[in-house]
Amino acid sequence: MSTLGIKDSPSHIWNCDENGLVDHFERFKAVGSAGQACYQIIANERGQTITVLACFNAVRTFAPLLFVLKGSRLQAKLCVGAPAGSLV
Image (cartoon, rainbow, N blue to C red; front, side, top):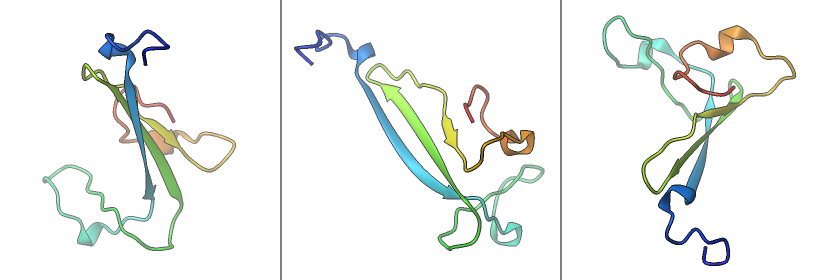
């Protein structure tokens, strides 16, 4: 950090974390608010894995969520329910 000159610039210090989610959901086992879509993360081999990357810096600024999906063409239905500003 000293070499880059960012030691005293917390807005330049970022951390990222990635997580793998499975797109296979079973509605009857999920619990949530009435009228809202319910999702459940399950550990099994059904469905595709979606990688989600979340980044934030030392002054609590968040970068848009990045969703990485398998495929060469983006389908609009894959973006439904994603937080505003997310990158897919």
